[in-house]
Every structure is written in C-alpha cells, then in structure tokens.
Image (cartoon, rainbow, N blue to C red; front, side, top):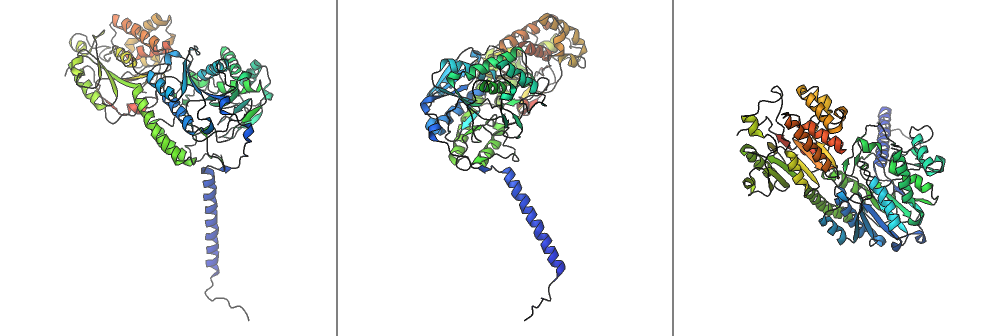
Length: 605
C-alpha cells in the first residue's frame, strides 16, 4: 500500500513554520540566558567540618561607631547579630568611638547597652584626616592589645546578618574586594608601584600575595581583601601590623588614587575628593599585613560580605550556595530613605526569608527616627518681617527639630521650636533699608553673618544643623538624606572664591585678598577655598566645627569693620577651608529640591 500525500500540503508554509519555530527557540534561549544572567545563581559549596568552626567563646565582634550615620547603622548591625547570628548571637560585641569628639549620645549608648554591647570612647584617631576608614585601622590595633578573646571579627557598621554564619578556624578569614578599584592586576598596572612600595614597607615581595578574582567585575588581581569583614587570630598582631603599614604609607603620602578627582559615596555619604584619593589603602595595608604574617588564610564564600549596593543593578549576577542562605549583607547606604525600594528588591533577589524582610522593614522605621532626631533645622529671624516668615517656615516642617535665633522669642512661644534670644552683631534688614547705602555698586546683597549663631545653637543638641533663610518655604515633606561630616551647600556656585569674585562683584576682591592674608598670611587660599551659597547650609560635626565657626567669626568682624556687607559665601568658604573641610555640593541637593526661596533682598513688610 503506497503512502498518499495530502493534497493540502504546502512546502512554503512548512518552511515558514520551521523558520518561526527556530526564531521562537532562539528567543527562548536568549530569555533563558538573560534570566540566568540577572538571577542569583545557585552553586554547590562543600559543607564545612564542624571541628573547623570557631566556638562562640573564642570570638568577639568589633565595630567602629560615631555620632553620625554610623550610629543607626551600628544599632541595626548589633540587633541583627542578636537575632540572626545563631550560635554566635550572644557573642560579646565591642563598639569603639576612636574620636571622642564624635562620641555617641547617651540615648544610643543605652540602646547598645540593652543589646549587650560594650561601648568604648578613646582618642585613637588624632590624624585629622578626612579618610574615615583610619578609625577601623586604629580600633583594630587597640582591640588586639586590649581584648582577651582568641579571635576578633572585624565588621563595618553598614552590615546586617541575615542568617547564621560559620566562622572558620584560621589565622585570618577574609573576602576578596568586589571590584578592582585600588588593587593591582600585575606588573603592567599603574598601581603596581604603590603596592610594591607597601610590600617593601612590610618586608615582603609583592609576589608573595596570591592572585585572586574580584567578586563583581571578576578581574584577576593580587590579593586585596574587603576591610569591612575579616576574622583574625588576635595574638598574631595582624591588625597592629595593618596600622604600622598604613601609617608608614601615610608618612610618605602614598595615596593609591592620587589625582583621580573622584568623590566616593560611602555609607555616610560622599567622602570628598581628598578622602577618595586614599580609598582602598586600608584594604591594601590589611592584605599585606596578613601575608607578611601568615599563609593560613581562609577565603569565605559568597554568603558573606554581599555587596547589596551593587546588586541593585539587575544585570550583575551573584552566585549563592544551594544548601545555605546568605549570611552577611554589606548594605552601604541602602538603609537611607531614598534607596529603600532598591534595598527591598535586593533582599527579595537574594531569597532572604520573609522573617528577615519583615524584620528589616521594622528596624528601618527606627533608623529613620534616629536620622530625624540627629538633624535640626535653624533660621535667623530678626525684626517683624522675618519673624513672620520664620513662623510660616517652621510650620512647613512641624515634626522636625527647629532652632530660631530671634530678637523676640515670645513670638514663637506657641510653636514647638527652640527660640534663642539674640542681639545682632552686624547689620540686619532694617539697617539696609534705613541707614546703609546699597552695597557693591548696587549689585551686592545683604550678608547676615549672624546665622552662624543659629547653626551653633542647633549643633548643641544635634549632630547635623541645616540653616535655611527665613524667607524660604518647604513645599513638600522634607527628606533628610545622609549628611557627611563638615559642610554641605547647594550647588548654586561651584567655583573657588577667586573665580567667583572675578565674575560677580569684582569690587569685593581687594577686601577678600586682605582677609585671606589676615587669616593665612597669603592670598593663595582664594584659589583653593570654594564659595558657599548661604541660603541652605548643612553642618555636621566632626570635631573641626569649632575652628570653622571661630574663623567665620573673625572673617565677619574683619569685613564688617571695613563696611563690606557682601560676600558672606566667601567668608564661609574660607572658614571651611581653614577648618580642613571640603565643600560638599551633593548632600543637600535632594533636600534643597523641597525648598522655595523668596529672595529679593531686605524686606520691610
């Protein structure tokens, strides 16, 4: 019996169907590859022999904490240890403030004490450097000399435990850095000379550092370990050796990223270009200290030091063990309100338990409360028109702390603000309207240097003070972002003082040259110090604010004696530079977006 071909058979249709099928298969393969690339990959990691694990009584957790954004981070971290660290949840925790001028508030100390945390404030970091990671270096050396447990687990404060960790018995336990950054990839690398010099300081050859692969960009580098998570055997002195290597490099001014003009975003905000030039140097010192001491180094798997801030990018894969959940997240700045949604997405992506997700959500509410409690808004309200405007301004944000510097405190008695009586030291609006001729060939604006006293008053009880001109309005609920130490201003003028004076109010230049020479003996600082737009200023304490206000006061007196009533932003910029602050133009930008400034000069009604 012969086969009969269906008379409806169409070869062209068959070709089209096959072609469509092939295209569909290719699309499915592309989709699969894309999902594989975006998803958290599951890998098999051999189970650890429990005899190799450190016993809880053998270790102690060590963190650095200061009265800034590290404060709520530390509370979050310590709470996560007590809840999720399993066999290690009751291990002692020591929190150290290595700069006493940034010691914790009594309220935060009580919260840490309730978590069983021992708090120490000691003058360990007297460098005055803006590179805050020095805190961890000096605290580690202090811990080796003063603690008794055989092993120290050093943690950055911007971390959260989300499941029980396994701490392995080894001379040192570490995680590779996430991206190449300040590491060296070999002889051809521009950073090789820097690493060679550090190894020479430590008395070893660079070749003694093994090659490894960075966890995110997967670059082959000489061993460079993340300083935010390490486990060291205390009696080997690795952390003291880290300090010795780093400070020797500091004496030689060995900055791995010198001249890079970067501004690194850390968990406490943008650190500034000077600190950014040192970025990665602490990790280099730690890595070299380890390999100059021991070869018994355990590299922890991808359950630890998970860079949550990088995983907000869905295209970055992160392999995790099939048989164990993530243990330790390095969240960096993701706890801040503006990154909260991304934080939740990363938690879901890492398959954290619902209990973990709910607990983090609950704890972040307290994190926000702490942020608001650490920030105080302030303004200057001298004479009736400005008192009226200040009352309206304070009512725009009634749930935040306020300080009002005013000649009539009684006008604010019905508002939940702290009104401070003040007699002006310089001309106020009424003086410009009644007795002082227009300044600067009718181009100058009134300068009210007395606003520094409002900032000083706000800083008496808070970590950060934000000054707003009284003729401002807050047009929506303000979002209080992370405020770095030092000074932050709106990026209205992003020039040095000399550049600004050469294009705006040139008549003031001789006075500023004289002021610079009076303060520093030279006018050169006008090329370095930056102009600070003065309608919205944030000051966050780091111990140098006293020098800042002292210099600002000297500048104000100098200018007012010469009847130069314009250029307050230049005086503020000089004071910041002399105090050692780098002006930050990013930190108040989002808050500034909620402001409407009336402006227009002195007001009589």
